[in-house]
Length: 211
Figure 1 (tube, rainbow, N blue to C red):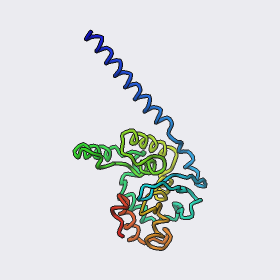
Figure 2: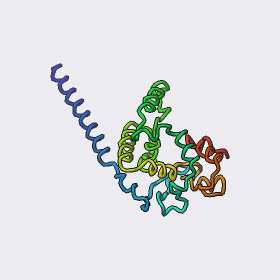
Figure 3: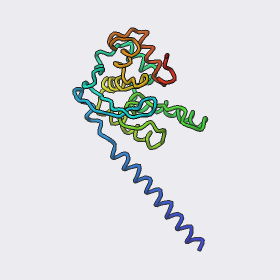
Figure 4: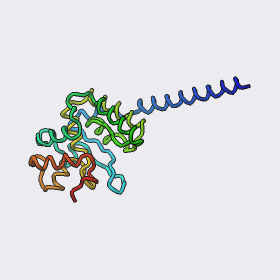
């Protein structure tokens, strides 16, 4: 009788593991395509949240009047953002495994998701396609999308997209909007000090908002 009960328990465990594996596989296989992002003339619509957690439509691409193409982004801004957010951006292929290892160590020490370890590419994947929930399955999706983006897009394109969708204030998304909101000028006219100011807000615009 004990052997029969053990066998049943093992069968249930195996079924649960298979069901979980199937769910994970389906979740990853049904991820959206990143190929449309390679077309600089194309615009897509995503959903962003305001600080009251309400959903809003946001246009990613040239149909957004505040869209700032890569060539119009100041060099100082690009350098400051890479230095602040992802120092190995030009060397990795979507995931910085050393940074992720440090993040896991910190999370285990604190007993919670205290540090993300996400690259600029991973952050872009999250901003465009995923929710903000901190779960392992979302992190897995983020990593897969980051790999796909690195295959399909240049580093310039990834940085251009990131800087045009990143949150920098209350319903302030993208450098083009942020430069107008804080300084009343287009992003192309930002000074080095202003670029550093915006880059310093990236870890958390609600926490680091100067107002």
